[in-house]
Length: 198
Image 1 (cartoon, rainbow, N blue to C red):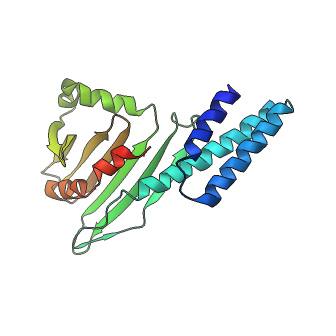
Image 2 (cartoon, helix red, strand yellow; image 1 turned 90 degrees about the vertical axis):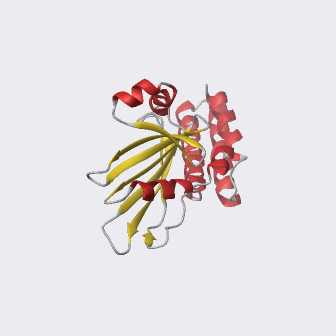
């Protein structure tokens, strides 16, 4: 099991663009191998977990780059990313960014979430339109992507969800906004680039 985890983490390291980050990951993996050979399985597993967390953090940074800039008349906060191990909600990596309308109360948040088994529930909704319809949401196509749209026009709030490559969930949600605002933010996302991300 340790060898399988070692191989998986090592494969992810290849995708790391920052040399210092990769070096730290490789150092942790090398320590894990050394401890494994010494029979210290707990220490080896701990080092592999640490290396895996560093890789997830690096992937979160990659996700941040796909969060668009603010639309005209809006201000964007800094993008933030987080990563969770398998023991917390099944694990996963996410990035989010908040946007505020300059001359109004509009608020939009874009979240990109991946590497979690919990995504299978959302993917099931996309594959079964009856499930989406039963929740009051609508299936639409935006930015060349199939989307689940749940917008309450009377309350000026709602969300649009898109699954990319059956593994990445993108959610654009807002309050005090028009549906067109949500769609415009969705269309500003580079879905082709996101699908190519490993």
